[in-house]
Image (cartoon, rainbow, N blue to C red; front, side):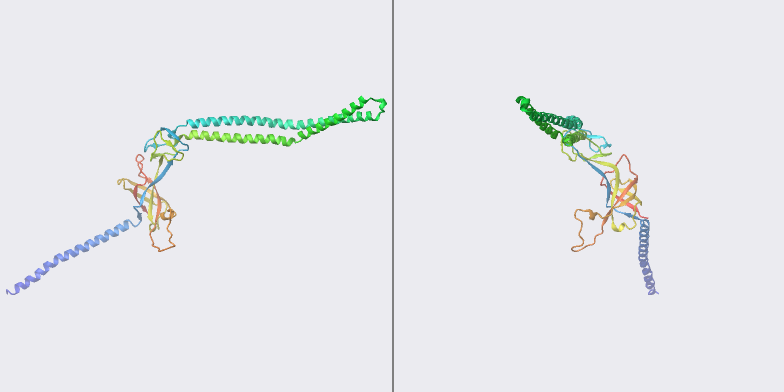
Length: 362
């Protein structure tokens, strides 16, 4: 009987050892089932969503630069101040430009006076030159008549007998004939001088047109001078926040020198999605946006547009895939996402903040 008792104890000990092993297997199976269920659930929940962390806030930053050079006489804004369109931001000393404007105004008035005088001369020329020509023609006709009379008297004195006249009368008739011939020649010359009526009028007209050009040039100089005076006040091109201010009172500004930028209130998101994530993405799809800087802020928006080209296409040196060895790289395409709700008007979003948009593609 004693020999049989150890035989009964051994099977009982083996059974006790198998119980923990079975428990561990069961736990492993349960954990695997839970993981699979979680993975399936996550896949189901995110099957219609596409997200990326390669995204940032974007907007319009307008560069402000002066049209004219000069010393800053007044600085009307400070850093990060909100300004309205048309608001004066910087004033440039305009003393020189005011003097140039007054000079241009005087030059214009002088040119206008000369033009008025030339126009009067033209009006007179249209009357005077035809009258002078007619007068010259009439004078020529008169002198020809006098010549005919003198020739007739000379002929009469030549035809009568010498006893019936005197040497004095003959000499007088001869002198009268010659004088009349000279008067005809002079009248003919005056007619030639007065004959080009149209040319004389055209000359007066050309002088008027020349002075009209001078008036236009002077008017342009005055307009430019007035613009320069107006440009001495640098105004905001649109509503926004002053950013990157690099000007102080007393600075000398060059034409086109960047003095600050204005960031417009309109902010959107530029997200660079992989090309494989664009399959079902369409404009108008709803988008959830999370901002790294404000974790509690939740924004809602929609896909506005998809850029027609990857970021690499618009670089300074695009890749030349037709030469050398080729390695396929998944490209990223910028997508513009417009923010519809969730923004605090009193707390604008700075540009280029990191965000994580999630597009609901279904």
